[in-house]
Image (cartoon, rainbow, N blue to C red; front, side):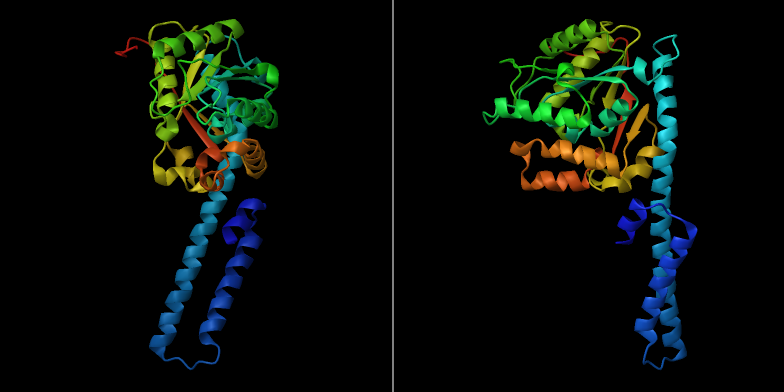
Length: 319
């Protein structure tokens, strides 16, 4: 309860002191009321009280740290984007100069994994486009999932005119299917050249969830980077996959993402989280019981961290 209250309201010193004081008084009253304690018993109760005080103080300090990270990120995001764009162009960029392409494998990837990034870029008036390389027809629900994707993107701020959904027989929605890296590469580069994007964001080599289709997209973009098919003014970013523990501790993971090195961080607060959750609820065909756990516990509903996809020679087998 203390965690929720501190995270959702502006924290001030008086409120923290009063909360800790109330906890200590409550604990003391329950242990001392009506009892005659020996010196040893009094010492034991004192140790317990101080332990509670210490734990509560640590928790409150951690929550204040998270709040500070959120507010500082709002000021540093633009600087991070400028640093990325300055590496690929001599022009001083602003939000409106960014033409970003999010490349995903299935409907619902955009809100499950990339919602913080999309929300932040849209807030900066960036032109955000989505390229989804399948209709999600694994259970023969392709037409319905396509509409769900359009509804989800509308919630996130991407209009229908900036959404491209690919329906290709060689790119089925199937975790056991090996997508052709050369085919995926050709589709992505064709889309990039047609729209003149200066930023492309997709999965990393682990695909966040380990899905084979996600990994195939990363291989395709890496191939484009290593073979020199990407314009010099376009930066390529991959969404960092984190371990299981970090993945499912919700917003409590923010300090780890803040301290560990990354090229770009996108963090949203409670309002952005509600927007991401509403987008996820548009995918009604996917709302199984474990999806609700994901929405509640996944750090990808609050934060995205990206690393640059390197350019230059690379030994990558193409099929």
